[in-house]
Image 1: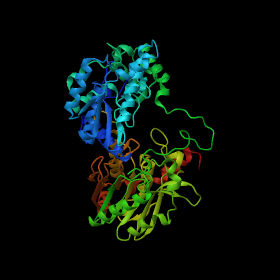
Image 2: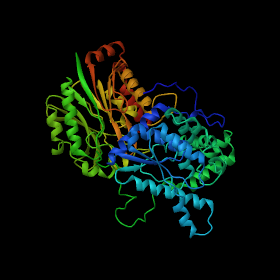
Image 3: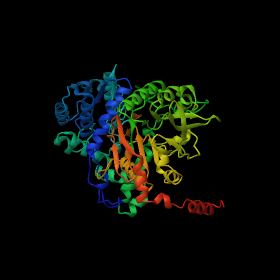
Image 4: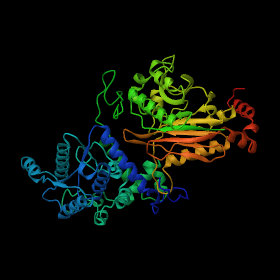
Length: 290
Length: 281
């Protein structure tokens, strides 16, 4: 156990104090490496598969996976569309090299374009969602017969619903889903993710010039602090507003969390019988796992 | 007069009873080789913790055939291990047995069943209702299973009614990774162990498990804390480990001579006050 500095001072909601978000990165690294190793083995698999986007989240997951499973047991895929930025490709290659992974490149332009050629004019969000799902279908294809697909959605994205169902949100194991974006960046630094990747503006790169923060309308630093107090500390939106947080920001984030909750739960199954999958047929996933 | 005791900081398989029995026999053999007179296993060590709907099929009566190999293995080293008990009235309990010289000496049923946050004990199990003391290898003892220890009244009742050691078999999930301290749960548990040991002047034997269940990591860090508040031995976090510690029964006497908190404790006043306050007198 690392011995970190003791915190003195109450944790209070304060828009100018991000210190409650600080984590013990070395402890987190240790826990996540053990999580990946043990839960992969327990499900009877020996290999993991993930998509490298060139961004910091998938870079951190790649680093954890390489440490947990050994680089040879990590299948890293870079799956650009024709509008993907050249920088994404450069960074994906850099990340793979940094962590000793061989990177497989699968261009998804042909299959996405073939589908939309018959669909007519569609908006960029629909196109983006389709790309995310094409990528995930390739990850699952490449997981056969002995691999698990790793998720790279962080806690901020999961809570805001900022992701595509059965696209980037789909996975078998997600090591980083309980880390806010700013926390995941801290972890990435410790893991040795190249600085150029850690510092660049986050983007889903689904259309030219897209950035997460522009699309969301607030920064991750703002969202993470609000979410931390609402979710982790169980404060009410009114408490945050009273403490000086911007009311539009706080209420907007709260609404995003509420409206996107369907994305975070299993599909609803209509209850009919005495015992129903998803309702009262409750077994652990690690049932009798070795 | 010191005695060696052992804590088996192990990672039970979830729902894998037969495999877990074999695992227990391995750890018991290791403890015997290490010269221990007692080996303590974590909460639900024979079944795993998050058993959910498996509880019923994993359950057995405390004197049942399923537990016979554990009883048999206790002929030359005492064994304290966790299982799902099917009571005579068919209720299910989270139980911890204490076996010595081939027979069951004591069973404690978890009284406080956490049903909040990541815990759902109360959905699957019925609560125990007693805090009995029994003669253990290292003196009169009480068992506080995991959440039981978080309730101040439990170690207090044991201390006030004659225990010189509290065994706390646990399945404590590690959480709280904020900078500026230990793992949050580790910090809380270490504070409790040391506080209870020092202020009730008794030994606290905290046996926590390791391994993962459905993405939740149990953090280990098992320890033995002496009545003077010293940590006699502590196992590493997150790794399987056989922790062997020396327990000195005379230290209890010396510490209670020096610091006679238990001698002077007015349990009668506590009882009278609580009875009045709760309208029971």
